[in-house]
Image 1 (cartoon, one colour):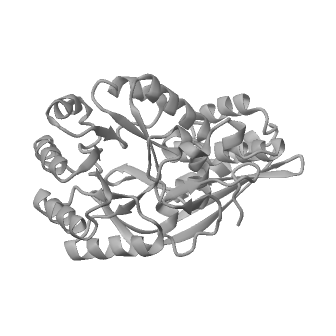
Image 2 (image 1 turned 90 degrees about the horizontal axis):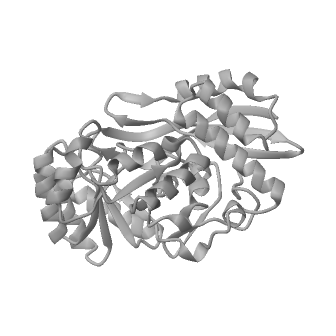
Length: 346
């Protein structure tokens, strides 16, 4: 198989601030795998899970470029052998994701079926996506809600909390959003920005505001405190940064209510599917999330959406210059199309 990789830069309409910092643009990778007259596409995007530690575009590009000579003698149908080789090469999860997505896209095109249909899934089970409001002043948060409402039919708002100014600033933002969107469903993601004491206090306060769950309230490395938080919180607790792959899920199962599965963390659709099934076997809820991904990666995840309880796949909707077109939003739901493979075009 022939493998090509290139970069593309996407710019956010609205910079996104979370507890670890602010992002206004990212440079992602577009990977193409060609064989038998068909081409599969994949994407890798840079991301971080703790402050000042990031999987960079340069790292991703170097890893994939170095891996190409080791992969080109395989055929796209040799996915098990390819997976073994990727593990031997010690690629980061983002680099693996680009390759795995492309292999799935190729397979769907070879079969002449969209991935969701290849897996026998039911699009009617797809839940509405949430759209994200980053850490902001009350006034700016209100404006961001209005901008989202001018863009799509909004059903659920995800509020980024963990403001460096403290939980008083978090509360002010929640109250501001509720003042202009009193009927919308609300969820919260603190991105590890709270202490245990603040997380307990905020869980009780947010419960009275009608919030449905809290995602990643505690920093990475404080997973032993999650059970204490769960015992004191009236709201379900989800983890994101604290959980990358399926093998980490059972260790957290008695401390949380759900996990956020992201394609860049898992290393592709293959492991994402495994993580979904392990989470469900452990009795946990499943959320599908994203980083600064374009329509390519988010469409890949949209094919898995019938398995999920919550969907946070809105990053491409906040881009000026998304180079791809794939899954489309209809009445607040991100739906893949009927084209073979991912169904993504450029």
